[in-house]
Image 1 (cartoon, rainbow, N blue to C red):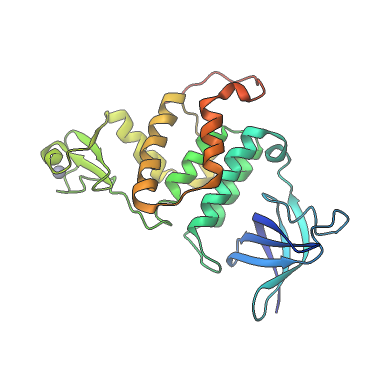
Image 2 (image 1 turned 180 degrees about the vertical axis):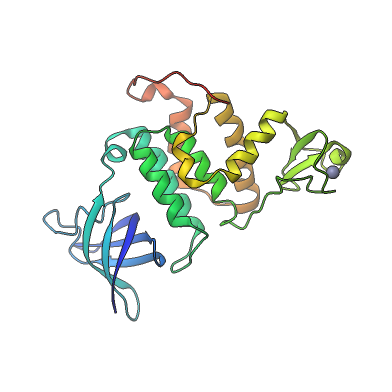
Length: 261
Ligand SMILES: [Zn+2]
């Protein structure tokens, strides 16, 4: 059976002399893995369209065993992501996270939309760190984690002082603080921020404008949840951590004034 699908390349690994095994996330049918015959040869018409991050239309033949990628027609090659080391690092992290948290033919709630909006926003030079962080929060339900952020995770109260509990994966009100000795005290502003991150629609991902300290706070919470609840270790994360510790590795860029929460 031959199908034409809109997809984004998550991963492309060399196979044998001249082939690639390509993992793509399609809008219509979720994640797929297919053999792209000859794609490793630079002169192949499949060489460019099978590069990681490419957004395009793909003709896939499916049958018994692994399908084959017959043709590709690029929509966007994500040029900025390819050319900017920081953009590449965060985009690599996003595609690896989505690849690890989804299964072939599985369809998460709008995973394609999230991937599409996130990569296009990074390619349009929005803050890649904020966008990757947003993807981490948005992928929690796909990873099977459903934080309780609209009320106290223990008693259901919506009024009072709140803290974040990794044990309950959500907010605890001051009346319930004693059930988790390791809770993280948060300000009302941080509480609103966590809620916003979890509920803001994907289409608004590009408009997020966050201070460094805010990103660090939000990252610490979401990564602790991933480490404790999901347990995925991503190869691209160690490079990112290194970049974040030593930003002088990056070419100097004009940064717009940071504002927002
Ligand atoms: Zn409570």
